[in-house]
Image (cartoon, rainbow, N blue to C red; front, side, top):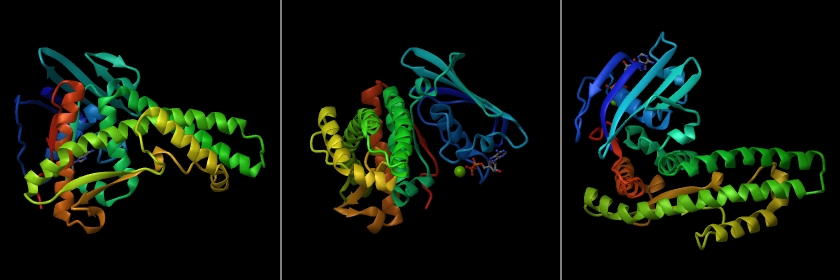
Amino acid sequence: MILTKISLINFRNYSKCSIKLNDKVNIFIGNNAQGKTNILESIYVLALTKSYRTSYDDFLKRKGSDSYKIKGNLKIGQYSKEVSISVLNNDKKVFINETNIKKISDYVSNLNVILFSPEDVETIKGAPSLRRDLLNIEISQLYQQYIKNYNEYNKILKMRNDYLKLIYTNSISDYRYLDVLTDNLIERAAYIYKERIEFIEKINKNLTLIYKNLTTTDNLTIIYDSNIDIIDKSIEEIKVSLKNKYSTNYNKEIMAGMTLYGPHRDDYRFLINGNDIKIYGSQGQQKMAMIAFKLSEISIFEEVTGTKPILLLDDIFSK
Ligand SMILES: Nc1ncnc2c1ncn2[C@@H]1O[C@H](COP(=O)(O)OP(=O)(O)O)[C@@H](O)[C@H]1O
Ligand SMILES: [Mg+2]
């Protein structure tokens, strides 16, 4: 997949800007605060419809402007397509070849990007939700089904949490509706687990060698920590495990007023020579581990989509 051109209107510090890109490698050089990261960010936003630096679209609009637009021209084999995103006030629209795509989940996965930015070490050091976000974003780029399942999972999760609270406050003793919600949740959860575990397995296949090449000595692997027992990663087996977990813990969940088990509670760890680098790793090791993770993704993306993704490397040689 080759991005041949990127055009920006009122994005960050650019009022109007159009850049023709080389088929292979493009390097942006400039002083501090000139807008290098903003260009990479715009490509990321074009791919994923949101930024990794802010969750507010308003910050992406050039100061004083009420809209922004990003347009990219892509070449995939002999095919070309144009993708674009526009935000006017709070109205976000995405287009493929100038056709408005109504659902964001049908749009994401059209332009595949893998970004490395200096903030990425936070993914290792920070809260588990950051690590889950990374998995969700990357797998969403590969399978449209994943975002759909994930969105549905979150909706059912909220309903289930609300209902668990209601059971407690209203002393409801009939759990039939809870069972319906639980079964619906399990359907989506099992799929999410399966995709995440397979993704981490594929990363691990590449990771050790890539990390060794970067550092010459150490062994890096990722361990997926699930709050349910997953012995066999078939969807059916995961469903059985989940069902078991929920049916033996519903009292605990009612007392807590929330769903305590499921993919929204999972985490994964990066181990170098068996040690968790969140705790024992140096900053350099954490940064290298993230770079190795991103590089490991390239062949996975290529295998699934049939084309190499676009690699965005920001300040890779800093620190
Ligand atoms: N919404 C915005 N409107 C106008 N300028 C912005 C906006 N957001 C960031 N900037 C400007 O962009 C510049 C930083 O750009 P950045 O791409 O991060 O720089 P660098 O070249 O160092 O990577 C700063 O000058 C900042 O003020
Ligand atoms: Mg920068």
